[in-house]
Image (tube, rainbow, N blue to C red; front, side, top):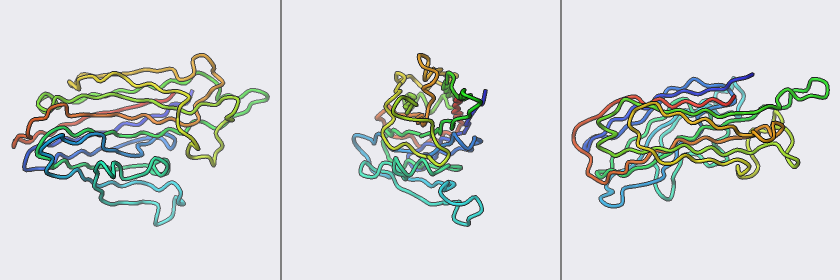
Length: 248
């Protein structure tokens, strides 16, 4: 049984005069990788300030030895431009470093971290395809930023969406690296829950009724929301948040 995993660390620093910074370090397989970040909410009032950041990613459309393989740059997020990469381009972007800065005076920022998963290609042994089995997604999240989470009234939820093999869709081909339609064969979103720092784990079976419906593509998103609408305090808060996801 093959196992794919990603683990990264987010660092939060918040304060009225300083940016809230978010970054992570990741170790991941070629078929499961952080691929985008997107803005989902801005402060309803007192929205002075910006939501910006920088990222470094591998452009998977380029040869591994190409000098253009590694891309770095800054970006600014807004309601009209909510993510640095389009929903199509993200499948070719294996993010290795990401930082966000919230300079809004009021809390109320919401954002998602996107993880892309490329399902297995067929592995034939005689008439059998060894990749046909039940596939599960196990996603977890925890942190140690009790003070900030309480102050910001921080919430989170996890969404899983997949394209599965079926009578109309064959196994993913090795050169097929992005879905050609919306991921609607499987969809599950957890309820909003307080991000209180304890380990939270969600386990889902993607194809329990039909093992031959192997996932072709999946997108797992971790969404965070500052439910508080208070002004950001001048105190700084820094901590680590660990997110992990396995597809096995």
